[in-house]
Image: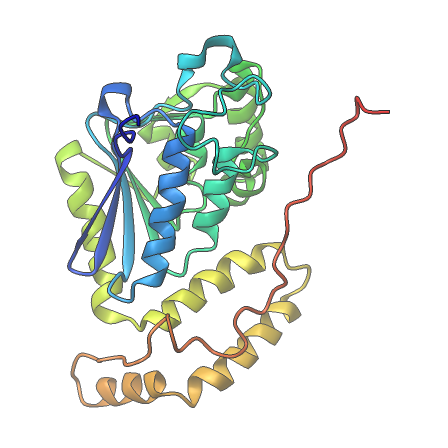
Length: 301
């Protein structure tokens, strides 16, 4: 029996912050099917563990993720010619973009997700960060939505995420040119929250995570995250009002709200009792789950 492939994603939980590290430093953490499977599993475990209050995603070595591993040469993006025996392909849905499966799993997270972009983030290395709630970048980072320069298209649901983050004009410019740009341009475009010297990047990410961990109610954070993301597609603020009203009624009569107000009045740190694993309101989820259905093949007939 062949040895199991080395892990391409590592995790470490410290002070209730889970660090997920892309771990192929010799390949600048280039993305593979195995990495996709391991990332999805890491987010599954994070959601199931009440000790995890926030997630930081970064890369090992000098890169964040240099995009898809191009070891397959010209067949890299030919789904029909990929080797089905390679690690990960047996698990991922063959009719779906692997980067999209990762992005949608991050989108579904009940824990806040902070991207610490420590180096090159190109192709899927850039698009996988879009459903993360906050992105911080090293001054050494270089980012590129390079798909048009490889003869493919933006993936990982980035055509939904990127215009919502930076506006349609800048999103289309970056996608059409495929230009690799620096952290300063990413900051000016609103893609990243802040730029830090390399040694200061992870401390800044952890400081932001600690602000969440030490001051907020886990269930409230999980709900706020989904309220914000889900309402990006609403056609009227009444949709938000309907959801807000139901959640306010349920949360307002619960133990977290009583503790939050009492702690404020007593000038002490709150100790919120509710847990994401067991105490989400009955109104959650308020949306219908979307199932993947492939587009028809225009060549068929």
